[in-house]
Amino acid sequence: MRHSLLLALALATAGLCIPAHATTWHVPSECPTIQAGVDSAAVGDTVRVACDTYYEHDIIMKSGVCLTSETGESGCVTIDAQRMGRVIYCLEVDDAASIVGFTITGGLPTGAAAQDSAGGGIYCEDSSPALANCTLLDNVSGVAGGGLFCGTNASTALRNRGLWREGAPSPAVRSGPTVTDCTFSGNSSPGGGGVACYLCSPTLTRCTFSGNTAELGGGMYCAADGASLLDCTFFGNQADISAGGMYISAWSSTTVTDCAFLHNTSARHAGAVRSEQHSSPTFTGVTFTRNVAVWSGGAVLCEDGSPSFDHVEFRTNTAGGAGGGMRCSLSASVALTNVTFYDNVGAQGSGLYCGDSSSATITNCIIAFGGDTTSAVKCGGSGSATLSASNVYGNGGGDWVDCIAGQGTVNGNFSADPLFCHAELGDLTLYENSPCLPGNHPDGGDWGLIGAWGLGCSATGMAENAHETSWGAIKAMFR
Image (cartoon, rainbow, N blue to C red; front, side):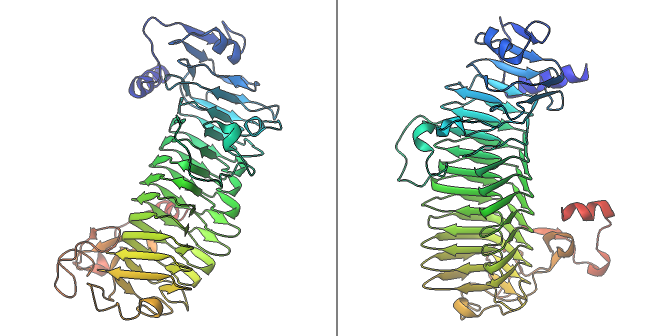
């Protein structure tokens, strides 16, 4: 009864199925295989699969059909392709189709053409199905999208091993899968270990990317158009070249909201995110924690384009070279508003490095307690950084030095302890007497909130004010 109620509620809420005057096809009691169930179904029908493991591959979806496990939960049904092909194939499947409550694993597409080897778990071309409560686990692609691939006219868009590197995209009808409460884990591909999207605008909500690997974009690769991510987590993904978490390329307008990037790594650049090629992604309410790049951009590398960051936290990220928190290069024009950099480490610029002809506009930000010997912000070439209403404090190699020297006492800038509530526990909210809160600015002016997060604790008895917490809660902050 509980599983039935959960499924009914999930489907009613998401509008994933059309129950009126429709037929439900049961697998395996009425149809021996999942493919047989889909083949039997018409628009508006449901294919309901009993809990078990099914060894099938290259299942071809239909428009208007709801494919669901018996409970609507991913642990109920496993579809294992056993490396004999991809798991599910969607071509010109509309947004009335849905895939709900499956573990999709063992996908390995084969073929010479790009569309024959992309999307190990699910392949979507000119398709916009809804995916919910699914786990895409241990799928492989030789081109792009180990777990999920979505694109338009993939046969022409997938070039150079599936990595988009051509001119501005021409107008066309785009794919746009809606992905909700799904997990991408242990998938691999040259481009986008978990997900790859090309000329495609997927929407991902409450999704988790963990332990995926790729050359570019361990968790996800997005080129042209733009994905929309809300409340997603990227944890422990790896890139052999760049962007352990997410790679954004080719005129992409991806939006990332209330997401977390933790413990992602890159063997070269961008531990968490890389943005390039005229892209203009926006990051709002995002945290970057303990990401590592062996070369540069501990958390983020911005090349070209105009990315923006608003109410974002960079905490304890590390780069072997430039930009412990972020590196800007080429002609990137980066806007940072209400951003907090804390305890980042880089050989050049613990918080931020601006190289080549890149520029960063830094407004109402905190850059604090970074690095051992490098300054908070460093520039190379003709790179520049312009700060206003910002607090740069306690950085090992100096605060208002190098390319931001002389800015420390103008335009509302200053240097003072931000008074974080419990930085050692990952809490970068502010004590009520912090100089970064509205009304507390050292010059008495009204500069608004400085940093990513506002009031978090009382200044009364600051030593006694530390809230109690469990050891498990402390460990969870650093996972």
